[in-house]
Length: 341
View 1 (tube, rainbow, N blue to C red):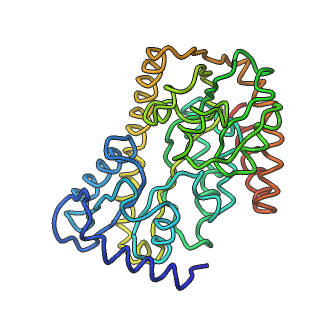
View 2: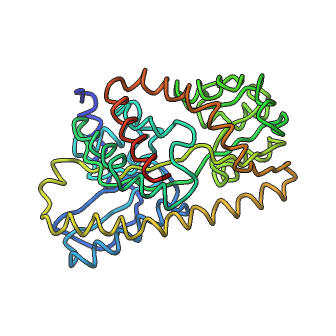
View 3: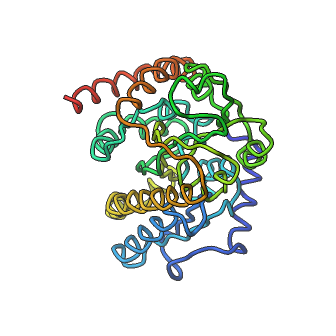
């Protein structure tokens, strides 16, 4: 529900947007689009949005113009999402991990190895009945979800040994505030602690927690490798972004322009994925050069980790999302079985 406070806050965001630094593609469009997100202009998400904006402007003859607001310029994640619901912001791109409070259904993506590491198979799941059901789940929550973009995969670091699955037991790992992620670690005998992301470096440095899970390029960007001794590349968690539009703005857009925007996002997605993979590869070399003990988990070990953690994580997800979550898992299981052969 959108409160009066949210309305006032959203109005303030709209009023101040023009005074903030931003990335624009031209002047006076018939359908201007404020696109808000939290990453920096140097990261793949923003670079991809720049490409989408350029394609959309060209193909609509300048009638649709994206203006990008990176680095949370239009508020934190909640403010950006609520601003898009209310209409102060036309579009926001948000990680699924930040959307569970608005739409518990998407928290299914927190289940370990739900999206396989095979790029083509993961994309088939995004484009098929499972992905379409996830997008549709936003409509009754006041958001139009256009598409889903991949944004890397999580791996594990710790100051204690990560030589095998057994050694996770007794360790403390920082997670986002998610019962699914907490139960994921409990399933292997580890303790998960919900800590604000901005406090994670210090928490690792002081030993408040032993380790954490994040994509490799996030680990280097945030300098976590400076205060961690071990890394095991598990790729157990897919980080997914959802492209969300204000429903009223989207409905008012001519159908031809809707099609152009949708096709532009689909066209740029593979480039974003390649940029993210290149960023992860570069980050791995930085981590190795820093003296961190690095190990790549093989498929057998990843299978054991999936078998140990996914059942408990699925139970936590159903407890969170209820019957709607059960339906999503049925769709996923049927689609995964078909794709896996």
